Length: 91
Image (cartoon, rainbow, N blue to C red):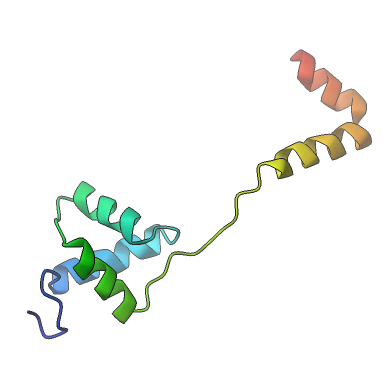
């Protein structure tokens, strides 16, 4: 146990988790666990989850909307039909 009460997470690993979270804010505990493994650090998944809760680390949530690309393409077709048609032909 460290002074923070984490069993497999020492200060070095805690700093690495904070750094990875800043670099990849969309990663939750599964993604951070994989990123730590990629860095050669093994952490108990429950300890990581507990650490993240205690340090208030959460993944930034974003919503993927596959129709938004189609909607923007339709708007482009309506507003710029000649340009979109040329792009579709490769010219």
